Length: 636
Image (tube, rainbow, N blue to C red; front, top):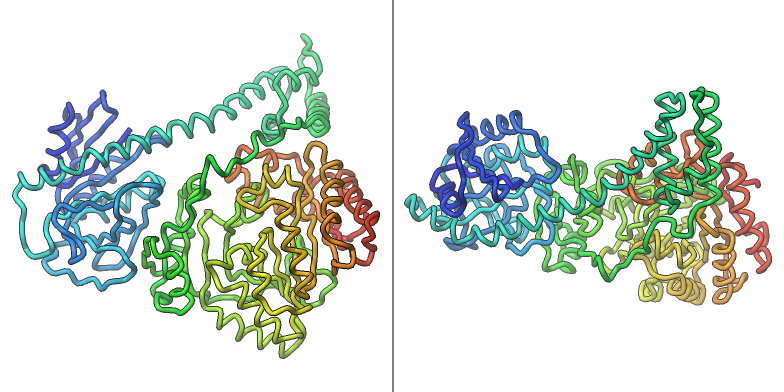
């Protein structure tokens, strides 16, 4: 259903004249509906307060479907960058007197964008100073619509489409002129909204179908057994993993005990769960996780929107980044969390069109290394999050569960990081990982962060800097000052798993070519076989991976090698399931140790042994190996 929202009748009349609609309600608002076109029209009355009351009452009376789309359409005043008749989708909606803002999520649309300010009275003289690169518009209702709407509806399902009726010069258009202005812009808007509605309907159908099937299977199995609530949850989890790991319903049911006339007791139900878990882990299909990711059929369009904290609008790093993205919409914000932490974010769209948020870090710059990360024997192991979120989209990445969305935050005040680092180094040496919560090397063409940290390390030998990456950034490696205290750490995976799980990342060969260049330039080189995934044919895949590595590199090239099975915190895994509902990695039946989810100890040993033994055959010594295991002892 598409719900159009107008403030005054001349705006509504443009829609009523084009569709067969009947009045179905009259409360604090007037509601019209067209069953034939799946279209509703909500007439709120003029002013922010009336709009807020009408929108609140509508949402109280009417349930909201996941595929409902709301669009506030109406006239507005414009600034000198606009002309009468121009139409815009609004990237921000701000209450003029308080400065409070909301931010619709806009993706792949054909319209120009603007910033919208809602005033209690008509604006007769534009007075908002120019910030960013978008025109400024003024209306009297949008913020009143937006606040109650965003509490119940995803920002990606909410649109504010405004047509300029005057240039804030006191001109009052006639009712007939208002209707004509709306009519001229209505056709392209409705075409776009209907396309969005169809996309949502298809997306929901495709994503709900597997869960319906899993629920039905679980119900059929549980009918013959006595299951507790916890056991039912585990049963659904195993079936979900089996489904996304490529096992058919027939295969699963063939592994279960034959039903009898005697009801099975709880003990037998527990035995069934154990048998089912053993079966799905032993018989994972080679089609695990479905089709490989095809970048050509789903091109990414990153950073079409850049949100910039007002405090850093003129910061040199901000200007440098904006100069590299001249066609992006620049939207000022008070604080990065207004966008990064907002509720009901559309993760599926953010994966394809992540936005960039430029901010100032006013908090902690460096953190002690986490237990799930390897310290490589370093006493003062620290990491920094100068960038939050990654340009790559790896299905298993803990960032998918760590952050509320896929948008990327960049802290531009690097000078404060280096000032704090000066203080730390004055007291003791530091081993610093600067690229855990993002891949800085992959972002080097856009951000100066990776280069800045490496240049700092080159002049501070008491700092050991690890730059971990999956990139193949040859120009970046060639332009850096070579230094042994800079560790270029490349995460490596079999090409099959790169294709299946590590979306947008370079191939294994490209990564190895860049690693070889790093050695030639004089950097220390670390290879990271981490995370090792429990996938079909894992032993063969990872053995072949190591063989491929040493067709390009030699043991003498390496400072050390990091090995670790996949692990993730319990809380992050919960979020990962929501972010990646169709990936088998999210639903694997993990064990839990110290709040960390991991494979069974025996399986961890098998996977680590395969990679370690193959590495040793190629001449890697035990002293060069660093392992993560569930007991965190480093011993197999």
